Amino acid sequence: MNIEQEYLDAQALLEGHFLLASGNHSRRYLQSAKVLEDPKRAELICNALAEMIQKSGIKVDTVCAPALGGVLAGYELARSLGVRSIFVEKKEGGMELRRGFQVNKGENILICEDIITTGGSAMKAARAIEELGANVVAFASLANRGFCKREGSTIEAKEECQLSSNVPFFALDDFTFEMYSPEECPMCKEGSVAIKPGSKS
Ligand code: ZN
Image: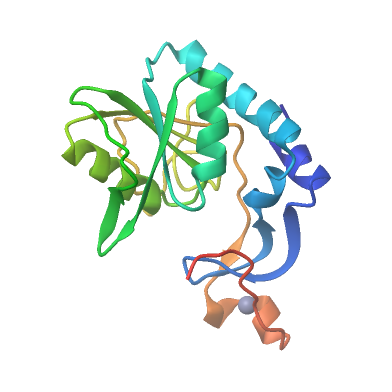
């Protein structure tokens, strides 16, 4: 599985001048909703991710995604793993299960995102699950932005990474784009204005 090629084929790897959720600017942006819009491609990608997780021997009962970004990837990964799929939603200061979703004490939960940058949303989801007495046994995302250490990669975690270092993190590849603070952004210096392509506010 060449995940970068899948993003390119789906026109989901955008080139331009982007404002990221972190407040930094970048020339490239991963529009993950777009790589998952074709269910056949979503299935292939998530099958590859599921295979990595199964090979590790980690037992997963349920996949939980932070809404909205992780929901499609989480659902498709759950299908590949043959397990239940749930999601948590934002509340003041964190995330919570709604819509009648429940977890059991001791249940093994994998937290799935579309992309892990620093892992902030994934950790909010993990805390919501752990407060209910379930275990967070792994993190997974389609791609890793290079701040956190994924299984099988030589890229070490940066200090910005928020994921628990004792929980394994699975992703299909590292995408390490250069990012700039607004003050140092070369595109801003050329007079262009960064656009915000995602849904995060
Ligand atoms: Zn800029």
